Length: 272
Length: 272
DNA sequence: GCTTGACCTTGACGCAGCGTCAGGGTTGCA
DNA sequence: TGCAACCCTGACGCTGCGTCAAGGTCAAGC
Image 1 (cartoon, rainbow over the protein chains, first blue to last red):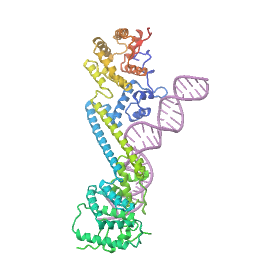
Image 2: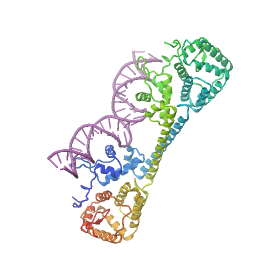
Image 3: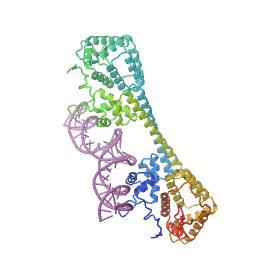
Image 4: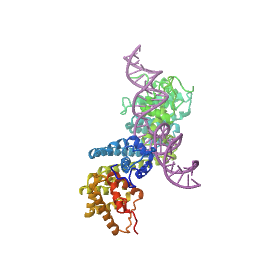
């Protein structure tokens, strides 16, 4: 009523935009526009006689502003506040966002490093020392199944006590490079496919018992600097038992000889 | 049946893990474990007599593998394939992932840059030249409302033809620093709050017409190197009309004087 | 006047990776 | 025997839209 009303370019009719024109001007999809309406970021405009939304030029500007923030990685929930924020609040929010982005970038860079290590490693979730160890086992001719079980065990250990892996690995390395002990390990490894009634088991149990006995005499009182939690010991024992059909029988035989457990083998009747 | 069955550590019973124990060993949440079951990443284990899931040690290893990949940013949908992939496929997939991560990182870095520019700029979505221009308008004493409209216009222009903004801005800068033209602009700016019946309008229309006339005589045949699309012209005119109550009337008066349009003003009766 | 194709409308599901109730049953310890 | 701490399934929530589905509208050509 207060405006001139004969020009052909008045926004009331001719120049009003449809939603797809609006979207095109701002470089977004129609769906996004409706989404912003639903989220309350962009006010719903008037509708024309058939219910179509009709936008003025101001809506284009608003929409571009929204997109600019969204393209900058601002979550839509924050776009709302930012659009109506004063300079000071805006600066604070921007600082916030920048911190968030920096930490996300760092996160992704960590991901890249992990990916790179996955590509290098023998298998998943295995620290490099352990990779070296299983490679050594392969050189020494251990059966593949045994190597897998060993590898899995180290995955479990690495998950529970990552800082101890390097030291424990070093011990293992010396053990496996020690001639008689290696032979014992290899013979244990040969039990891969034996059943619980395998005739080799008793003799093997004898050898293991003798060895442990000797080691106990020698290293008596030597406390491990990396105590393995009972839970992990149980888990590793379980892994051993699951993996080899004859493992249960072997432990029984060892128990007859006064030893219990496997990962952390101990005397059944503790001697002072 | 084929295994020894008197030991206390057999996995069938005692050593079987509940879901929360499994989760704890692998360092994930119970919910995540169930999610992996639902996604088919981790096989559903046997249930005990009361329907509880019971896991063996092998499940811990599998779960750790899944987490390792997931922690490296591998989408769960790809984890499935990767877990069962051979070395070659695995290497390819890892290469893929690394590329994806790199591009995501670049994306976020672009976000950071944009955020930084937002913090610096006069307002959202405004290129630096335009910021300088509106600052100059402020110095010259243009009313704040007029500056806002001008700024919004440049937001629209920058969105449609970003590469042309610098050149167009340069033209505008020289115009606004030209004494008589600046005075005209300032007087137009004073119409901010006038109604369509404002008595100053006819005189202003005369001045605008005279100026355009002179400019047309001088710059006849000078083709713009950055043609502004008709759609954008219309949009900018609409923005002008929306923003000032008397804009429609001013255009009418101009039309009486033989000119039509505003952003891209032209003769109504094209003179050869 | 009728068809056709390009728009417009609302409503609803889907996506990733779980977090987080809700509403139950189980177990183990005091 | 009671209580806390587990376990179960089912379902919604979050982010930012993409993508049907099932219809109404508009402009153009016949």
